[in-house]
Image (cartoon, rainbow, N blue to C red; front, side, top):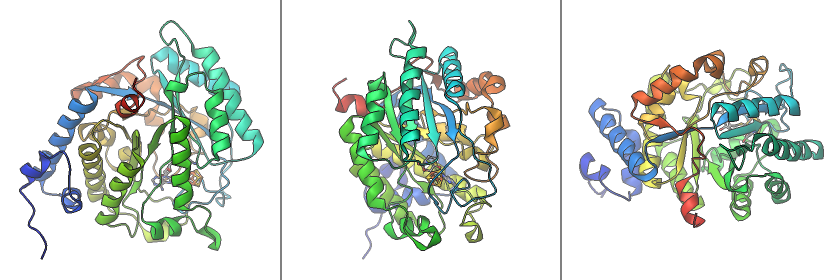
Length: 375
Ligand code: SAH
Ligand code: SF4
């Protein structure tokens, strides 16, 4: 017989949760119940990582990709897309702008490539960003998060070696779902498995061994995904001992291969995503959690709601406007609206309205990583 669960207030006061409790928390939809969950997650965030929100300026370096993830609008087989690659000078200019604004950290994201030209290009970019952003305010230069897909240990080691700021070097590689069958389905376009879950998990192990701050995450609301799958995803975050999590709703892309399977309606999808953020905070405590841009597709204040539910990292888009239309992972991605040159002050006010302050010029490293490394 199924064990009867304790009342919500009792469960929310716990430091550890059973699978049944996690699934129950993820399933909440009653207005008062979700408010209680939100408050518990917000308070846990204040206790375990403090009251600051840290910016990582997102630079979408290139939409050239060698793989075909079925959910993604810039996958290799989308032949309607014109492909771009930012020049080194363009990337450096955005990086310098970010440093001048007090961002302290940027994220370089792109499609997945393994060729030597790309790998050495990233090495050069890392070296030069460091050289041009060291200052009295940022003595170690900008902190950098790389989000460049599955890579070999050798490549990850080269990028680590090229970074002038190894204590602020992070890597974000979502495993997307811990359900192996679903993972295989998502990565089996053109009748062959292009990616294996084991591979991605191995990549995360390499990152750990190399000393990166390791970020991972999942998509929420993938067709066929269950609440138990999401609970297993959180268990996987624990197993990996992730330093950071970046996760967001699965959103349809007309240019992708999953379009005919539809998408959850915006309201329940937003609530499920916020529940997942809140529960991850309650389970993982002192990690960094990023408020995904995709939240803003579901509600105009989606990312702000993310902060209220346990996020402490935000990734304003710093990609030059002319490239934005070419980097549509999903449909209706906010672009113009996320222009930092006209929106940063307003955005700061919104963040302040949640009771958080922006950690200008601070690295905002994952407290879990700092503790693990005795820093
Ligand atoms: N190529 C790299 C980085 C760019 S994609 C990589 O794959 O890791 C970054 C993330 O975008 C992916 O991990 C995936 O979770 C997310 N993404 C792609 N398509 C999406 C979609 N249709 N809806 C929501 N998120 C999506
Ligand atoms: Fe390429 Fe990343 Fe999109 Fe997959 S998710 S197709 S690796 S850009």
